[in-house]
Image 1 (tube, rainbow, N blue to C red):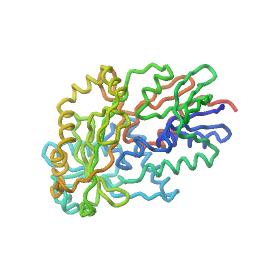
Image 2: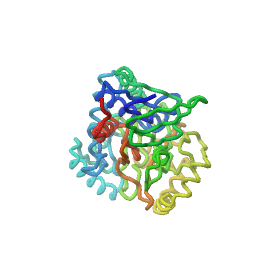
Image 3: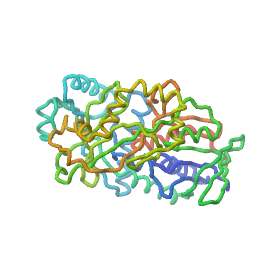
Image 4: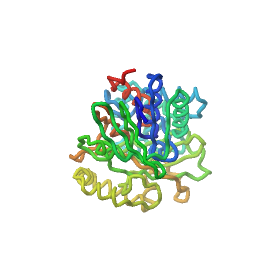
Length: 403
C-alpha cells in the first residue's frame, strides 16, 4: 500500500496536517493513521478548550506567531462549519502587588505581540466581574472557547471528502527509512499491514519521542507527562463569571496555574494543576505504567527538571491529594467558591518535551530527516495553532514526491 504522504497521529495537529497536504497536492495519495478507535482521544480531547490569543509567548517565537494566526483560522473554520464557539474574553487577574508588577510586564508583552488588550484597575475589574477579587487585570478580548474534538472531526471530514484516506485502530510498530521513502509496519486488530510513504509526518503527541526513536532518529529530549486535573463547578455557579479568569503566571514556573474556564455548554471548570504523571495516557483517578515510569527514571533530564522544580512539584502533588489546597488556588481570585462546589471532571495529560539538561522545551519542536518530519513538542497552544503548524509542516517539506 503505497502513499505519497503518510501522517501518523489523529489529534488536531495530525488531522490538520493531513488535510492541508491533501489540499495542496490533490493528485497525490495521503493516508492518516491513528492508533485509537476514534480521533482526538488524547491531548486534543482532554483540554480546557481555550482558543488562545497568544499572550504568554516570547515575541518572535513560533508559539507567538502560530497562536495568533491559529486563533483567527480556528474561528473562521468554526464559522464555516457551524461549530459553536464563544468569544468570552479572558481576564488575567493580579491579586498581590508582586503579581501586579508582573501583570504590567505581561501587558507589555501583549503589546509587542500585537494582541488587542486593555489594562484594568481594581475598580474596572470589580465592575466587570463582581465575584472576582483582584488589584487589576489584563482584559484580552479575543480569547474564546470551543470543543476541539468537534473541530478535529470536521477537519477529518474535509480531508476524506478531498480524497484522503483514514485508518483507525492501527498501531505503528516499526519505521524504516531509505532513500525512496519510509516503510511503516502496523498492527490492526491482530493483522499486520505495511505501508510505504514517500514522505512521513509524525504528530504523535505523548508518544513523539518513541516514534522518533522507532525510526532511529537522534534526539536529545524525552516526553515527560504532566497530569492536569480539573474540577467542574456546581450548577449554581454557572453565572459566577462571564470571562475566563486566569492568574498572573509566575515566570519561574513552567505552567500557567489554575484558572476558571467557561465551557461552550455554559458550564464552568477550574484547573488544571500540573502533577507529575506516571502513565503517559493515564486519565483515570489512579494511573501507573511500569514502562512509562522506568523510561522517566532512566532519563537524566527528568531528575534535573524535577530537582529544579521540587518545591512546586511537592505543592502541586499535595494540592492534588488535598482538595482544600486546590481550592485555595481558586479562592484567591474567586473567594465565593466552596469545597463542595468542586465536582469531578476528566483530567488531561500534557506531553512536555524535556531536554537532557533538564530544560523544558518552550517552543514547538520539529525533527527532520530526508524523508520524514516529526512534531516532537506541541503542548498548549498546539490546538489553537494546529492550522499554522500544518502550514509550517507543508512548507518545510521542500521536495514533495514527484507526480
